[in-house]
Length: 178
Image (cartoon, rainbow, N blue to C red; front, side, top):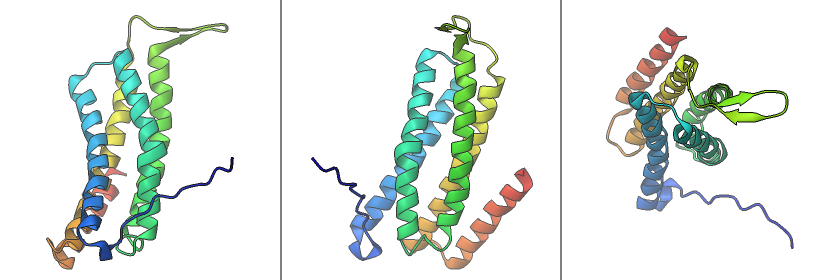
C-alpha cells in the first residue's frame, strides 16, 4: 500500500462565503487556545488533569493548528505578503515556549530518579509554569489581534488606514514588551 501525503485544500477569496467560513473556523482554533489557557490561569489550579489538558493542547496546536495556519497563510494572497511573516515569528516563539512549558510541567508533576518516574502527590513550584503560560497567552493574543484585523480588512469592515493603525499599535506593544 502506498501512502500519499494529502494536503488540506484551502478555499480562496473567489469561493465567497466558504472562504469567510474557513477564516472563521481558523479564528475559532486560536480562540480555543486562548480559552484553555485563560481557564487554567484563572483557576490557578494544577493537577494531573490540567497536565493532560495542557499537554494535549500543546500537541494539537503544534501538530495541527500551527501547520494549517502556516500552510494557509503562505498560500493565500490576502495573507502571504504580511500576516504570514507575523504568524511565523509568533509561531516559532510559541513553539519554543511550549517546549519550555512542557519541561516545566514535567518537572512539577513527575519525580525522577535514576530508575523510575513517579507522579508527585504534592504539586508545588508553579511560578515558572504560570510564567510560561502568561507568555504563551500574550503571543497567542497578539496573533489573534493581527489575524482579526486582517480578516476585518478583507471583509470590508475596516479601512486600510484603520488596519494600518491597528498593526502599528500591535507592533508598538511588541516593541514595548521586548
